[in-house]
Image (cartoon, rainbow, N blue to C red; front, side, top):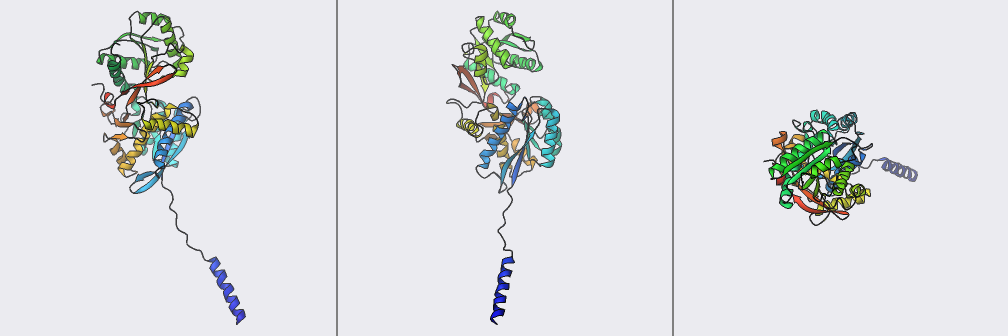
Amino acid sequence: MKRFWNVFVLFLLVALCTVTIPQPSVAAEKEFKVGCVLALTGPLAPVGIPFRNGVQLAADAFNAKGGLSVGGEKYIIKLIDADSKFTPEGATTGARRLVDAEKANMIVGEINSPQTLGVISVTEPAKIITLHTAAANETLKDRPYAFRSYISYYEMYPGIFKWLARNRPKAKKVALLDMDDESARYGHQLVTKASKMVGMEVVYDEYFEPNAKDFNPFLLKALSKNPDIIYNCASAGTSWGMIMKQARDLGYKGLFVENHPPAVGEQVQIAGKEAIQGLIGFGYTTEGELAPAGLKKFKADYEKKWGTWASHAMVPGIPAAAIFMAVEQAGSLDTNKIIAVLESAKKWETPFGVTGSFAGAETYGRPHQWFAPQFALEVKGNDTVTVGVIPLEDMIGGWK
């Protein structure tokens, strides 16, 4: 009997050891996939990588609170990269992988028009929201799923010249000198129109050939018109620096103004510190009392994460955050429901202290152009300081 009992106990122990004990189920983490089709290698990588990183910071801001809140569920934002190598073919191939294989919910990219057209040839039929920076109207107009994060010259010029008229009221005459290409000619048309709108006048309008180094023949003619502003629409940094240096050498005392934030380090090397004093540019800012605390944090977080700073990161990062907010407000991953929210003319108070809006229906047929306040930046000493703000209202409908 005792032997039987021992055998029974042994059998029972073996049986208990082989029983599968139910484990609590762990739900798979839900993801909102953002595909980044950008130049991550090659000559445009210094732009493509910061663009990608800026979107990552926007994702981090939402992931830090558990992800996107969509219909009572949380979705972690996950970035998936596709290196376009800055070719239309690479952009198309990358977008196809992200849409078909990765099942991306949204695409960021590309940088310029040929690559962007490759991306949207994939994303438009698939009804995937695309956030790009291409300037050509064909990348936005009649594209129901395409949105632009770059505030283009057309959107900026009314605000720039309204700011100049208010803050530099003695400046009435404008001289234009740029390399002869399509972008510069388009920019000159816009400056002529915008300056006239605020009582200013373009008194000199000329173009130079690529690789030009001696700008004195142009500048002597320009200075004979007594301009108050020499305006850079599209000249590369090297040419622009040489123009400023040679104009100062000829005795020019007026303002230099450009579309972009001044590249102080580069221009000091080319033109010298004294020549570029007072240079005014425009864009987002992370410096000074006027800079939003959120943008200062954006810069600090970027430097902490990647060990350097690239202001390009703000261009897609800020509107990407607005789209994430729209996903939450829509309460759905349905693209058309998200777009309906984005087209509602709502002002988005992004986590970065910048309040912007998607507008531009009068120009592009749909309100898919990002607008946000921009800052006037002036070179003083070895630094750029923030000296003013271009309000949202001076850009949206600014040509009226």
